[in-house]
Image 1: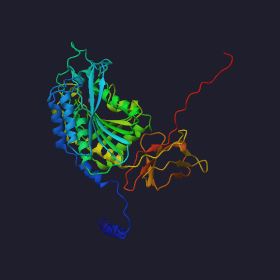
Image 2: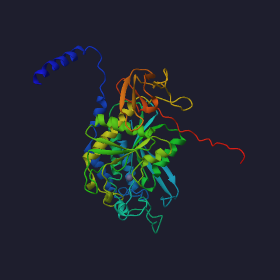
Image 3: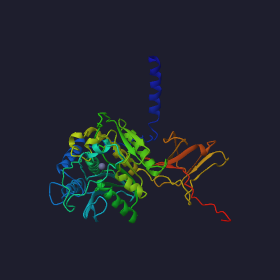
Image 4: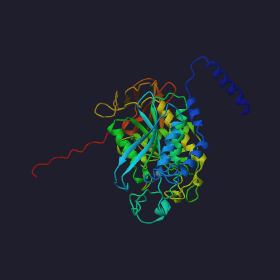
Length: 461
Ligand SMILES: [Zn+2]
């Protein structure tokens, strides 16, 4: 073996030196994204969490008149903090007047805190968490341990005075200080990166998640009404703890939930997060969950899904329910190293997506997939519409039974590929656009739209 190694090395060196004159292909990693991911600061995440904890409660129905305690002080601090990062960042309150309804027990003004980093293109990629908190007697631990089908997010009995602020202690350091700190830290590193992104990035701290995803639903409603082009939402809710309440520790994986069906845009986004997370943060594994969220639990990504937007939810792998919706949700339950890894995965995915060309269009005018058996009647013939900025395309396929792409192939700057003798009925095919630096879009899959049912008429009845 030793003797054989030397000649092989010589051949490799020779090959390398003979190719130095020609253009080198871009690697899988963009050095600017590597630098951006590396600039995420564990210390800053920790300092933000301690600050958020210091407000004692960030309940959406808590006091707004104290400069140090309650939701009013918290939202003002988040706004000021993000304003300090870069003049490029457009930071504002996204404010709504909300009358009493559902779990909103009195008329209230609700404010998401939003930072926009404008790109060359209005298409938007969101990174989000919710900064509001809640604490109930017994917390989530008591809800989960009970036998019945009780809704864990069910409201507590209304307070004696519904107009009084809900100022009981609700530190919410993991739920969802963790997602909020991650969002704030990514606002900092993206706005200070010096990278000229194609997509517009939005760093969104939602309010009133605990009252029924209210802040996210209000913003998603506005996006529909104002035709705001939201391309993707990466929502982070409870992403800071690596130790389950049962003592099981997992600091090396993160769960990403996405709604179906199998080749929905949200599933495609989830696969994208896994693919690009694995390249830039290989030590952290993204576990994809083929369901919208955990049993009986909800998150802000679902508010976007419900209005037709593409969104996924990040959740820590091992939850400690006794620390959720409880006074025990404190800084002591956080693993900063784990939170930082989750922030890096978010950053890698969002930066890649924000630099990549738009995904190719693989449907015709009537919504049918542009796939056929031509020319022989037994081939896989894939067509797509060119994406602006793409210099190549990567096609993917897998057996029609199974969630993950099994094969991929880089093809040139073409809009049609024929794979002879590949039966299109036996595989799922997809295509992604790739730019000159190797940034890759979502994969657009060729899927048949569901058939509308036309009732059969009968006579003589
Ligand atoms: Zn939450």
